[in-house]
Image 1 (cartoon, rainbow, N blue to C red):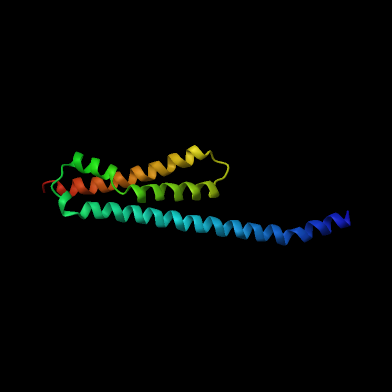
Image 2 (cartoon, rainbow, N blue to C red):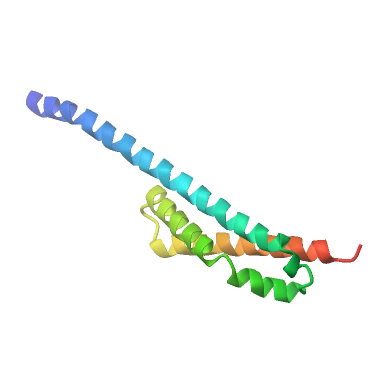
Length: 122
């Protein structure tokens, strides 16, 4: 019994180190997801500010926003799903994808809403 307890105590530092390593990986994944989000938002903001888009109707701008920033959008999706998968490993991967797609849809909706409100007659 005593040797079993000693063996368990000997393993505690390894378990603690693996938990620290996992926490570090989760934090890095979180930073990557935030960077992906910021990159996507910056790309959408560039489209919002582009002079050639100022004359577009709301529906035309909505279509444009849905089709631009493909690389940034995909990077945001992948990094967010990676982070969510690490943070919540017991949740179905499909739920993480749904969350990422909802975040992308919310970003698009926000930029379109700002565009339409800015164009509205005062």
